[in-house]
Length: 194
Image 1 (cartoon, helix red, strand yellow):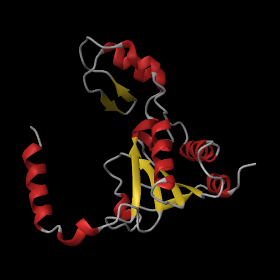
Image 2: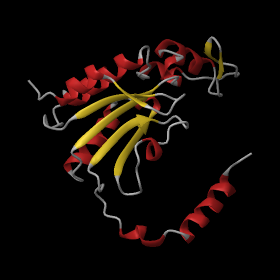
Image 3: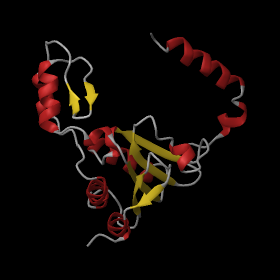
């Protein structure tokens, strides 16, 4: 069943109460950006106290510092004036339940939706699949704190990222809603480039 009509109905209601939001400036009012996971359990507006127009929120699978995420952060700073960035991964992330080899194998078997069991993801579909998945680094996660440190390090060491922009590292706890700082990541994220 499609959610098409539900989305259009919700948008109609949103339009009715849109009010003066058309006057919001393009640059984020609070001058910061968040890179986080696309997981539906995370609501950055709620866990970070955001209103429309406050901050840039960049989302992808795992909240990883991919080339595209860094591209967005650089645009956020260079063209729209953000001055601080947060990398926020989360507990119980789907990116912890597979690795590059598992994903490539599943995609080569079938392009249908996989199933998550206690043992991780497994392919339940019928072919044909595609071998194209073996050419992608899926940026999976084996340890949340380590992945946050890796991503903050990747961002801070990028040649297009100014050394003075602080990058903070956190893990969102899906059981409590709390943000837990990853001190090693934030330490790297506050240090000027050497």
